[in-house]
Length: 239
Length: 239
Image 1 (cartoon, each protein chain N blue to C red):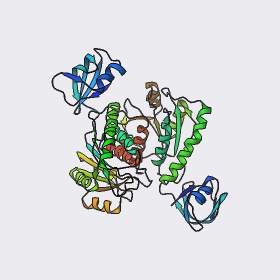
Image 2 (cartoon, chains in turn cyan, green):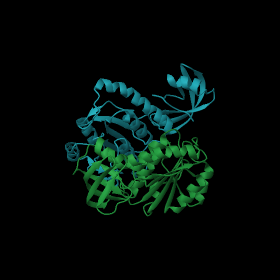
Image 3 (cartoon, chains in turn green, yellow):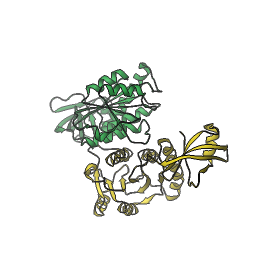
Image 4 (cartoon, chains in turn cyan, orange):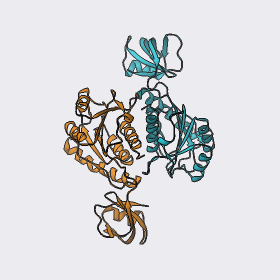
């Protein structure tokens, strides 16, 4: 059943506006009485279409419940800026795999170092990819891609999570040994193409962030977040 | 250190020929005395270059040992044919994540149904991708991409594995409950865009193949093999 996201729901009537309204009427050619899923803040509203126009689709809520697709752990992916369009790929996959938020980070070895202004242009596109992925895989919320942050900000944000993890290519404990099951919020820090500087790893370790390894093979910087997210979702019972 | 694969090693001198020889001399501009890693059948030979020409690079073995990057489980990925160039992506990632072999399968819901002849053309390219990925991530062997097989052949091959797994979108046990740790050979069957027909899942279940689920979110057909491989490699202590 088609799935749409809205900002707010009050009462039992919901209006879908903007491009989604056009999409419902023209691309999907839906009709009055057809059912759709409307998602808002982790809740899912099975709804019936009452009226359709390009400016808005009015729906009546038939039933509602908590989304079954949201993990019970809030995982933030802190991803060091990769080259070319790899971040788009990482965002799409991270949304499918259950990340709550994707936070690009500028680390010492990032080859791609966009300035704030040029990154802001990309950000719109990245959030659109997150929205489309959320619709496609059945998420109950749309994970947000945030502004780019510095390494120091990232460390502070990792410390604010119940469990902060850094995937370090020069070794660390296995994710199974990182005792992540007890955390309600997990921060996962993944490097760019060149990985992390030893200084960065040392700083994280000093701050209580757990250094984890992903085995002996050298994973590409876009493979590492997918692998780590999959394993974490499995270990926490969400996959 | 650059890594090259050869078919056979006997004695303490190894000759690298073909495109790799040209690559060593011209692209990498290596010199006499430089060291490279030569891989053969899961063994790694740290070697010193003795002579360089476009027709062959002669090396002397300095030391050798078993590859530390090969998993202790032989995992074959049976991947139902996906659309467009997704199989290329899946092959690259499966090699990084430790698959021993990738076996494309024609299932009921495959939209992409190349005939044998046109697939054979693709196969060369797929095996080249596997080779490049193996070099890049540090594998000790080059996983093979095989000819396309039928659903029935796939079932027979899954039965021949210690543990046969089918990722079924309509539910199954969690990979953690599938008791895969005891197997030396694991076969993992992943569907195409449309997933599997209930008949196909029923047949696999009847044949003792374990139906496993990957959570409530709908994973794209190229995300599912990466997620499942990551989880299996973690559960078996290889990641």
